[in-house]
Image (cartoon, rainbow, N blue to C red):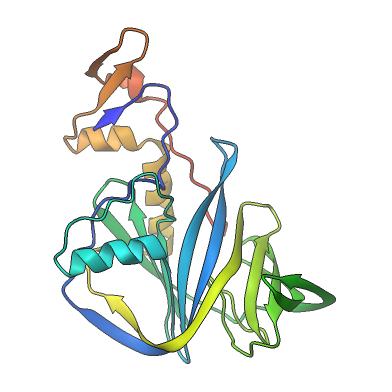
Length: 269
C-alpha cells in the first residue's frame, strides 16, 4: 500500500473485493429499475463526486446500490475475475427498504475489508406539496419538500409515472421521484433512465459486522478521521513517496498524523 505524504485520499475510489457471496435471499419482485446519478460533496477537494445508483422498486421492498458495486459483486459471486473500479467513484452505502418499514444499510469501510450493517425504523416522510412545476429529465414534475435525519430536502416527482419510489429512503409521493436535492448542497440525485420488467429484489448473503446505528456512525467517523493509523495497527505496510527526493520510505507517525479522508454523513441525527 502506498501513501503520498500530504495528499488527500479519496475514500470512494478503489473499493476492494469484500463481498464474495454464494446465495441470495429474495425479498420481493421489482417491477421498475431506475438509474440515478448521485452527487455528494468532497469538502477536502472542494468538488462534487458522482456515482450512478441502481434502484430496484417492488411492491413491498426496494434496493438502492451503486451500479458499479452491483456489477463488481455479481462477478465476484459468480467466481469470476476481480473487476477493477479504480478511478471510478463509488458511494459505499447500500440501502434495502424492507417490507416491515425497516431500512437496512450496508456501509463498506474503505480498504478495511469490512462491511457494517445496521437497521433503523423508517417512519412515514411528511411531505409538503408545493404548487410549482418544472421539466426534469424530460418529465413534467411537481415539487415537494421534507425533512429527514437532520437534513431538509427538495424533491421533484412525476404524477404521470404513478409509482411510489425514489432513491435512498425517499417515497410516499403520488409519482416517481425524479430529482432530490439536499438544501445544504451536500447530496443530490437525478434520474438518468428507467426500465420496466421483472427482477428479484435480492439481498446477498455476505460476511459483515452487525452494529447499531450509533455504533456504525462512531466507527465510520473513527475510520475516516485517520484510516492510516488503523491500517498500520492491522499490520499493513504503509509507505510514503518523497516527491522531492524521488524515493519511498516507511511511514512514520508524523507522516500519517494528517491522513484524514473526507466523509460527510448523510444522516445528521
